[in-house]
Image (cartoon, rainbow, N blue to C red):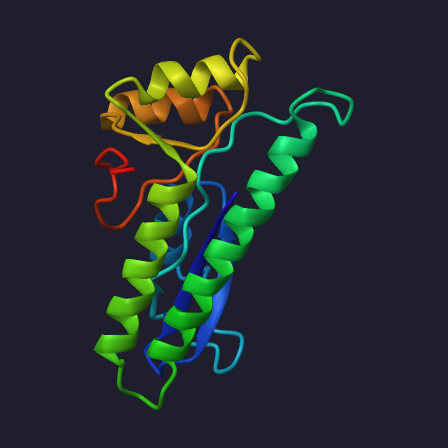
Amino acid sequence: MIVYNLACDHLHPFEGWFGSPADFENQRDRDLVECPVCGSTTVERKLHAPRINMGAQQSAASANSEARAASESKQSAAIAVAAEATHAAMNSGNDIDIAKLREAMVTFAANVRENTEYVGEKFAEEARAMHYGEKPLKGIRGRADKETAQELREEGITFQSLPFPVDFPNTH
């Protein structure tokens, strides 16, 4: 599932859960997505903190469970910080505080770089290997074309495209 931050034409913020970007667009175009405050069906997506691919679910008894839990906790904290900063930037009256929004994006990008490994064009290969238990779970980032991304989704591999580039290798 994908969680989108949404807002109606009256600037009422709310969340929506969708199976895919196409599901959101389909429901929105058929006026099935409406603001819970005013009922407006003129709705648009807003900036949101995406989920970073952490691989497939494994049993609690696996050797990776503690490392995975720590990594997910760190990831959740990073997303929460970015989401809070984004929320503050977008909800300071009717004006977006560009400086706070930029700071939130920089913080989020830094957390993504620090908590994931850059795998470049091997993203799909690495994601599949982790999903099918051939490699240990870890946070990764990289590139995939639209067709490959769709194939990964059809295989049940969860990942999120980022709204800005953070796909360069770690500098440390």
